[in-house]
Image (cartoon, rainbow, N blue to C red; front, side, top):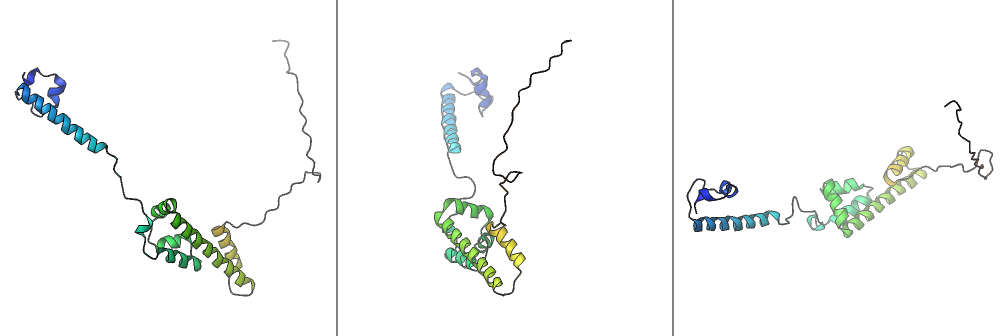
Length: 178
């Protein structure tokens, strides 16, 4: 069997174009290319981690819990905590998703932060220096505080009874000329 007698699909894929190869040699090359190709294909299709590994609490500094708690005790925000730990937004989000320990520590730090700001407000009510308007807006923005809203539930006539709804059925108008 010669190389020229092989089907065109095989002969186009061979590296040894226009060389005459004995049938046994050709079969050996096909088998080799098939198995090598399968090994390469399987290696390419393996599930391997792609990109950077996810951040874990093991990647943080030894005293990461203390850093978060100290920041919260001084009124620092979550952004300040993140910056003190030298974490990017995506690493911070990954840690919050993956680690219960990290999530609980951050929540405790945020609670301490709110306590610090509430104490500042209490100090201002007893005469300490500060700007009450700035403090109020800070509390609204940081901790979702909001002004009390009054909702009027009375009807237009001041009674609490709903007005009845009236539904009328009207016959369609028929044009006799059509």
